[in-house]
Image 1 (cartoon, rainbow, N blue to C red):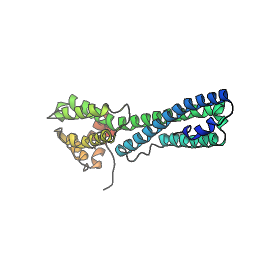
Image 2 (image 1 turned 30 degrees about the horizontal axis):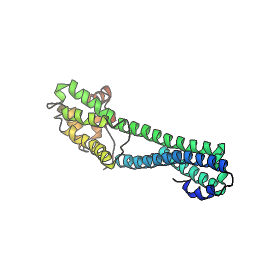
Image 3 (image 1 turned 90 degrees about the vertical axis):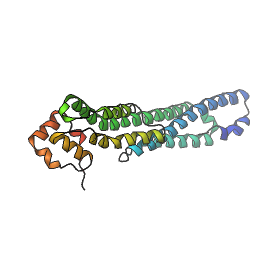
Image 4 (image 1 turned 180 degrees about the vertical axis):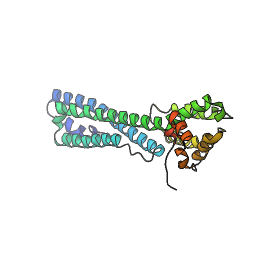
Length: 231
């Protein structure tokens, strides 16, 4: 976003050399700050697009709103400077540039926070399952090493949204692999069979009304594993 290069000719024509120098200094300062904010906004929009491929049901509206606010502010700032070059040295301009940076930082923060909430919500129930499988040998004849490895890989991505499409694809594929990994755990008994069937999309929800099944899922905090869908 180059506000200043468009106005260089007008600066050169100003009559007072000292005043022109002050304005030029202010313009260089703001040019760097605005360029930094613009680059940050582009990075946020890229990250929103990547994150959306992992969670297509999420629009990341708060991050997009911050970007829209910054774009609107930048357009007003550019128009004001085009109308009056002297405005570059006024306090209001500095405040607007500061607000641009604040919007950029806020957009990144709200995106990171929302990403962390979404990914954590998908991982945590499976963390509980891994603990249950480890602690109840009769549930798993093969153990949960594969599940543990996959969860550890996903957990490393919780702190920040993906910065590349390849990384976003890796997270999405990891989440999609979770049901397949559950099927491969070797779960046994009524609960184990239900988990395997549910992982394959064929679990009978009526079984959850059985006291033993209900007590198991509630007692081990595993209800978050289950999602309802209509076939």
